[in-house]
Image 1 (cartoon, one colour):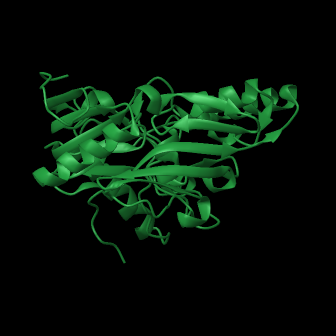
Image 2 (tube, helix red, strand yellow):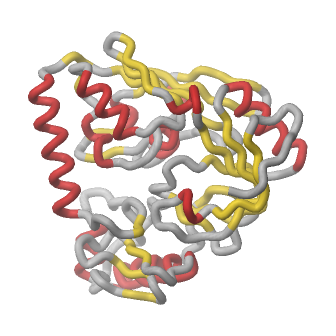
Amino acid sequence: MGTLLAAPDLPRDLARDVSLAPFTTIRVGGTADALCVARSFREVTAALAWARDEGMPVAVVGKGSNLLVDDDGFRGLVLRLAGRLSVIVVRGAEVWCGGGASLPRAVQRAAAAGLEGLEWGASIPGTAGGAVVMNAGAHAGEMKDNLAWAVLCSADGRRRVGPDDLDLSYRHSSVRADEVVAAVAFRLTPGDPQAIAERLAGFRGHRRATQPQGVRSFGSVFTNPPGESSGRLLEAAGCKGLRIGDARFSPKHANFIEAGPACRTADVIALMAEGRRRVREAGGPVLEAEVRYLHPEWGITRPPLPELR
């Protein structure tokens, strides 16, 4: 990480000119002008207020498992949650997490306490806060099924909201770009520990069997169209194993992109665009990106893919 700077009214850790590639699972992308580690609601609010005063956009980066950083990096503040904002506590039939807590670890803690309902999150290598922003889901489960409440921080303070306040739908929430999901509570149900463990083992086995392992990649590239599978559409369009630069659609699952040692973000974007074009040319729907993209000026948005009709 870059040189640490002392800054009044900011969290303890603030660094300049930080490479963001190590903070993503695909390991590509440029540097951020500033990176800050926040360990409390107060520190998150202070960091957001400082960025607002400086006229800097803000991006929260957790596990980086659903993020593609531009080759030119980010001319803003990257915020990471740690300390109290990454802990996991079981309270009766609820699991309380900091927004930076690992979602798979929360699943493990719930299972150890004999609580069921969160097993779908075992194969999503992100944070609890990021899962709320994306309304993440898998195996016929999703965040809106389990969310009890969340704490959102902004430059003006914090507020506690329920699932009905967040407009949760398929891979969508109403969390604003200037807000940070700093804490999350899951409402679960007591269950049979052995049955929970068996379900978890089944989900993990399915992931190992169907998704690339041990490679630089992120989660699903495209969302699934209604009643369809993006992986099947991409494979039918001849994209499985297709390479541009040092990025390729995985030979194991066409809706995953693998990065080689010389891969650049531009390679990944070009490959996504070609995959969409081929699916559309074959008579399929226009695929929508599931992966998020960190634009140098605008913050986290959708990847810059050509318009298709």
